[in-house]
Image 1 (cartoon, rainbow, N blue to C red):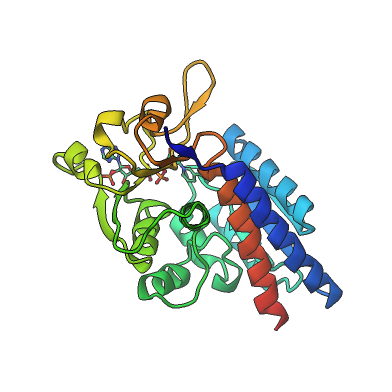
Image 2: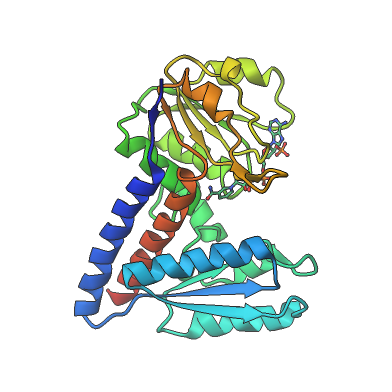
Length: 282
Ligand code: NDP
């Protein structure tokens, strides 16, 4: 039976660490602050933004949610981003995705001052990650690495398979695992014999967006399985990309959904915001 990686507990610990750094900043007269742009009425986005604001409060970070109408023009959105970029009292800026369809999300993300890019999506930060240079790491992959490290999963020389190649999860995840000296394979929708590839892995990261896609027969005995997926089932419940019940019989380590990667994403956002405020302060 796999060891359960308790994302909630680890995230609470990371948030407590962030709170201590916030306190140290406040003692120097700096109040870390995060701006979140929320355009439109997407219900899931509203929940995510609420959770982020709650985490900020818990860590002592001031948060400002900028609610924009769903039919805002690209020019007005860009003007709002520019306003936050120029505001020295705001250290981080996050644009909640997805933006309404008529808006150019790429242009919006590129317009964020990269020093305030607490999501790590700006090309400057993405480039830094590629080069192994200091920069802001995207929250979800950074959170997965923290889960693996804190759980004592051996990474040096391990075979790692990342399923999914998105810019926000799969690709940066693969780079971080490579930096940790894993031998990394990235799978996607064109991968042939995907089950055979995943079966070779000591570490599997599933970031696909398909409920229970990774089944027990695809997982090597003792592997560490990190489930990034968040899928809403017809009955309203949440499940990951991994068939949790069956895979946990076989894996060495596994993250649950909910309560695994999700809380870590927010905890790493807190850390990135604190880092941005510290960089601003010095
Ligand atoms: P994307 O839709 O951007 O990417 C999905 C990836 O999965 C693509 O690379 C796609 O391949 C690949 N894929 C799709 N179908 C298959 C298949 N049949 N076989 C192999 N690969 C396949 O998703 P994201 O990366 O943004 O998110 C992935 C999941 O993680 C989602 O469920 C999302 O909700 C969740 N998520 C969770 C977060 C958290 O905090 N826990 C944060 C961010 C995301 P291709 O490139 O070929 O199309």
